[in-house]
Image (cartoon, rainbow, N blue to C red; front, side, top):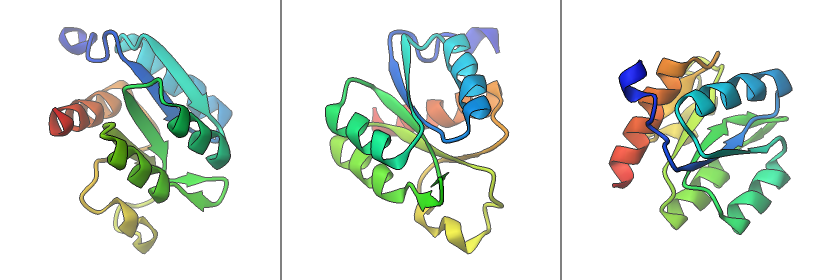
Length: 127
């Protein structure tokens, strides 16, 4: 994947993830993809504030943040024209995931290829 290691070159990423170790792994992956910075929000409320403040170019949204679904956050990002992907450990056929219909969703556990491919498609769609 070295040819694509600069996918996020010069971009700031909002990572919404409520599990500390998963967030750390995702940060490492995003840095390997050459993200300029990674802003982490561990709660729904932190994510809302970060989205309102802006200052990032692309986002990864954990679908379930301490029991609260992140679909409204995705709608906020869409309104602002900010590319994003959802991430989940759920089975993609789970009815709880109906809010991701038509959106890009990557499965956890995160790995560089999944994040790369998801973000590449999100950036392409918003280009």
